[in-house]
Image 1: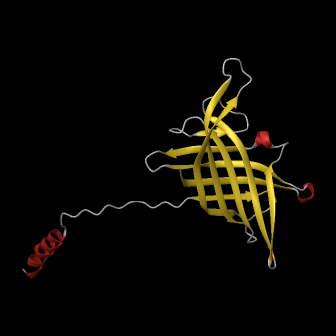
Image 2 (image 1 turned 90 degrees about the horizontal axis):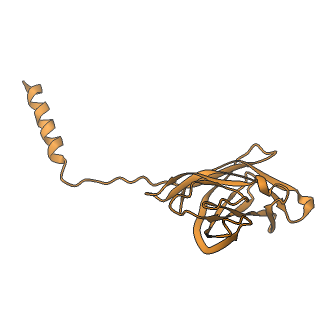
Image 3 (image 1 turned 180 degrees about the horizontal axis):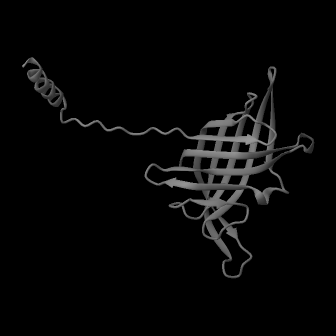
Length: 191
């Protein structure tokens, strides 16, 4: 008898504890960018980024049917650290034709409606004791046609993008060599 009385009492207490206030839960996403450099096993990563629109630009085509197209230039900057503790800043400049649907593989070969990859560069800050050494790398001339920046997912409600990229970046002085970015992935980047 005591057990029968306890069960309804608990149900009444639980149900009366549920008020009319409904708590809304929102998912907080953290953007991340990871990649590897050819010849290294460790992963470079970044959780700090800026993605912002710039000015409009005109791209001229040699095709007679489409002489020139107006694109919106976007800048994406990732800041992070290498496994050795050096800081990096990877900058990507895209010319985008359709801001409502940015999904596309952006390359140096511009698409007339979607746009293309204008530039990709990296500043590497190496700490050598108390001094810092800054090194700049840009798309290698011989590998620029193979570089790409792909946005394969876009969430227009939350204004997030995700995708992959690859590039060969050459340092200003030829003796330093180059960085081959591989297995590069980014997700939950706000735009």
